[in-house]
Length: 224
Image (cartoon, rainbow, N blue to C red; front, side):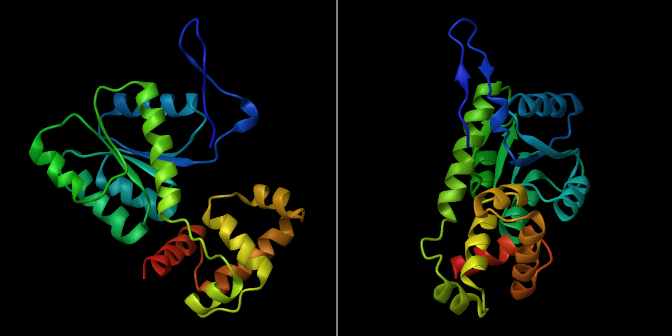
């Protein structure tokens, strides 16, 4: 997490380049120009854009091939599945947090959107500061929601029927909290190959093949 510095003179955002945000955000928006504006806003905020999807089909391809940490999701995407349909998949299958971006603020749309449990709802038009604060609050609340206070070897191994070592549990927690391999190297003072070896062992013991699958399995276990 990082916080912007607001210049008193022009009220513009400035960022410390040394605090680049590793959060990957998927934009799902059927209007090309709005999607490009959002992409520019996110770049200004130092977020990484994992992709832009202009319809539900594109969104599903992005989610399966390059899963993000957060999705900015338009509700109405033209023909085919709507943002509501994608939101249900994000909630039930991927466990990826999402924020609705929409031009519709009527009661019926809001009630339908509420059922999917979004972490934010922004009505267009919006500005960069609105987007930034909503994203930061959403990411914080999502992290708190899934925060597990019992990251100890015995509890994790019992919960998931595994045989993790203490170091693997430490790294599993860091992976769950979104740290990159490079950040893991710095924290644990080991080489990148050592981290990759630990992560590979974690995947094998959880019977998964990627970070997104590992996180989904851990989240599901926490919910049960």
